[in-house]
Length: 283
Image (cartoon, rainbow, N blue to C red; front, side, top):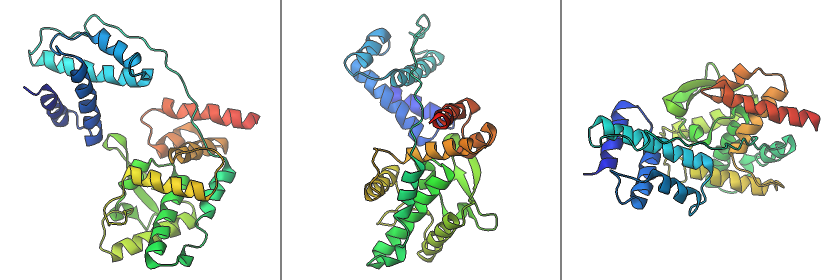
């Protein structure tokens, strides 16, 4: 019997989880089943030692896999496939390293935006269309702090022109409205939207084949412009989210507002940005 398939189907039916989350659960269990030869009577401690020792995983990754296994064995108990969970008498403690969010300097953000000063000067129609898309994408990430997965999911119907807002589909199927305050950002966004509507599209950001852009596609685009802007430090598009939040707080925004804009489930997640702003003030 395929226990993993049954478990994932159970989660899909009862927990309303995203496909990405379900795939992560399945991946963790496949890794565990590859290691453990007796999954109905497992040696959990040996598996944890394997994750730490042979694989050298961080505590955060190991903790996530433990959560997956706990859910799985609770499910197995409820289905009477095992008498008791192997976690019944096990407790794990981890020292969680608290890392400050990595940000870009305002000068680096300006360099990125400077790459899009004149998209009309592109040599071919395809190059111009690409420049219009990339300008709207990078500017939107900078100006709103949305996650790259959220940017990839934006459709033309999510843009509310009358209110200058965009409906964002966040983690856990939660939605929020983001207001676009910058006239330049809004103009880039609507210019792209007009072209996409003319092409009969659904999604705002697409790849060269007309398919919805992927997270990896956005990372590739960011890497291209980071190189073009000659940024001195290595960075990822997620740095833009951190930079957005840090600058909001540094300029007087309250934590609750920043939490809502970023789509954090808990204000405790937003709290860490206050430490970054304190360090920046000292500098």
